[in-house]
Length: 205
Image 1 (cartoon, rainbow, N blue to C red):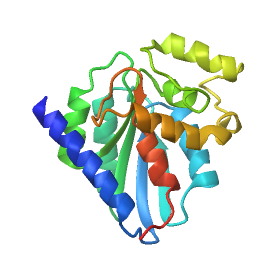
Image 2 (image 1 turned 30 degrees about the vertical axis):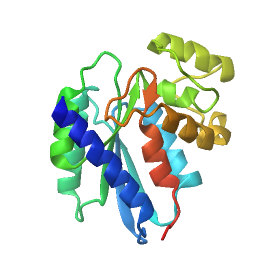
Image 3 (image 1 turned 45 degrees about the vertical axis):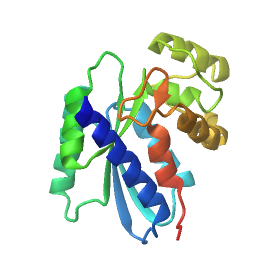
Image 4 (image 1 turned 90 degrees about the vertical axis):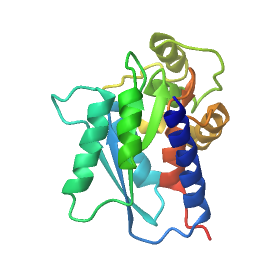
C-alpha cells in the first residue's frame, strides 16, 4: 500500500507541475477508455467542444473482446503508446471500480507512467457530478437512479453530451473536492476531473 500512496503522490505532483508549466502546441494525449461506449462518447465530444488548442487528444475504446479488466486496459494503453510512430506526451486510462480490484492496474500504470482516471463506484458518478454534489457512499444502481432524476432518458449505450455540457466545470470542482489524493479514491470519488481539466486547460506560463 505504501507503494500505491507514493505513486499517488507522484501523480499529484506531476499533474500540478504540468498545470504550472508552459504547454507547447502539438503535445499529444492518449485516452484509453475501459468501456466500449459511455466514456468514449463523452471524451470524444469533450475534446471537440472544450479541448485546449494546445493539445492533440486521441480517444480510443477498449478493444472488443478484451473485456473491462482494468489491468488489461492499462496494458493496452502501454502497447498503443509503444506502437505509435511518436510516443504520446501523456497516456491516460479511464477506469471504474465496479466489482474490480484495481491493485494490478495501479501497479502496471505506475511502472509505465500511465495516468489513471478512476471513478468509484462507476463512471456514472462522474456524470452525476455534473448535476449535483455527492457525499455518501453509493452503489452503481443508486448512482444511475440519481442520474436519471436529472437525465430521465440516460442510456450508457448512447450518451448525449448535451445533457452534461453545462455542468462540466461544476463536475471538475466537485470532483476536486472529493479527491483524496490517491489513484483509487473512496466511494464516492472520481479522478476523471484531473483528465478533464487537463484536456480543457489552455496555455499557462
